[in-house]
Length: 292
Image 1 (spheres, one colour):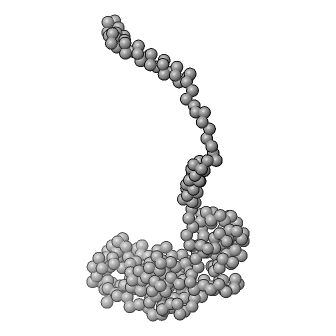
Image 2: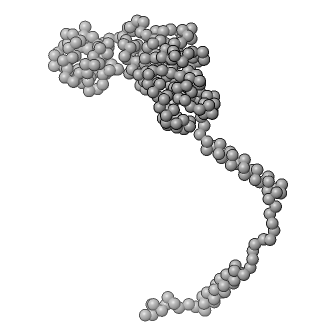
Image 3: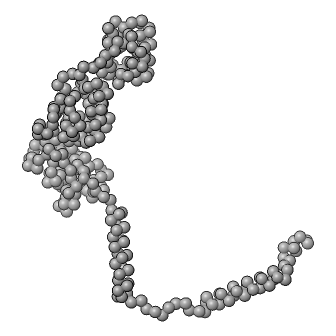
């Protein structure tokens, strides 16, 4: 009981402190309710100072609006996706018309042709066409009826060669759908496989689309098969065989297990006897292998 009472026991100085605290609270509440702190001064909204502040606020608002507005960068309208078309203000029907047109391996080469295919209105076309970016070799006087050939018809004077194995990045970039990155990947893959032996090897380049492969092969071709360095499979090391661009670790192990089993391969075609051997890659794999 004494412990309970001790919580309510205050000294004289503590009681005085509590008393003055209550007095201050009552005093401040009285002032708050009964004293008017509002000003009777009227603001002149037509004054020079107010107008200047309003103009500043308006300019800041415009800057903020511009920063929130998505920026449009130059682009090839032939490769507009559903999302990009939506962001540009195109309707679903307009985007679908473009995709149907492109599905027939056709390309639009001018802003006028873009409008003819998509049926976008003049105001949207005028807003978009300053950002259209077509390949340099496209001329504005090509007729709309010849667009199937237009995507690969180029001025041969703009390229140094039509040999796929000798084509440079600059040469490849003249093809519709081939940008700087893809052109570099095509050249780098050629180095990796020691040159293109089959047209179909172009499909193995990472990120290349089927229609772009067709565009490239309509201009460039394999004039002469490259001299690919071959290694003797019967004497090669595991590491040497693994360097074959079409042989992974698992397949390499199967090849060596088979070699150990038969002691020596008499003909390279014996690789087909290996269980699980990728027959579809046989013609590519044997480019780098021999048995004599």
